[in-house]
Length: 296
Image (cartoon, rainbow, N blue to C red; front, top):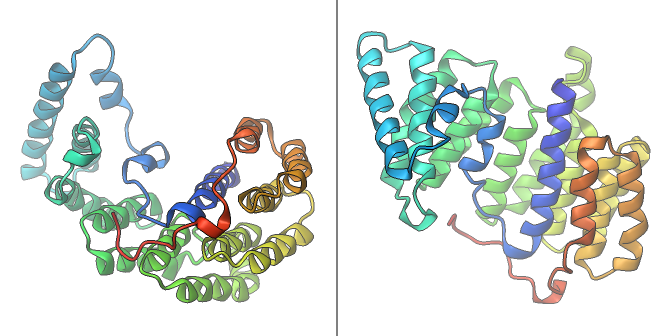
């Protein structure tokens, strides 16, 4: 189960970073991680259906007030904290992106901090906390949240990807590369202490994606080739290299790799790979903008 989640995460990272290599690395969208968080689905189900947008908003606001009342008496009630977090995030998701202000995101930070503290083994909360802090411009707070995960779980893919994106966003690609290389150097010992704790192929793919984001295509290809050599049956570095070639306009060379990746991949990933293979060509690498220096 854990490996399946890691596979889906890294596939998403590959496809996202492949695009970010050309449009600039920005903050991971806060709302885009909701499907990976251990939140209850009760609120979501209760606010869908025949309710209008205004009715949904009113219902969610009532739920927020109800959870706040519970937490006044029981500050560490996790059911109430999760419900409050989810209701507030759903209220945020009803707004247009341009309408969301840092103060709107601030309201999710407190329940996330409590949930992250109460659930140190569930890194999803700390990752969401880091993303929320990054959204309001607290990059140091975001970095601290990512580091808190990586200190005990150096191979946590979500935290690694988030920290890497943050560093590249700050125009610190060498720091991102150093973090990933250090993770790979220590992987053998980490996996001896806790088998399977560091997915070295996934980390190698992330390393290649950072090189790709800096238009260091030879280094990116080398990283992907090393990952492919390590596990020839793993589809992830294959699709990553295919995306790299496609970005450079080498569609003829990319096609057999896409085909190979689709053949190697479990059924649930084949559509994503085929969709990436058939997507319109990306702009020429020479015209690609550099990564942004500040989060959007």
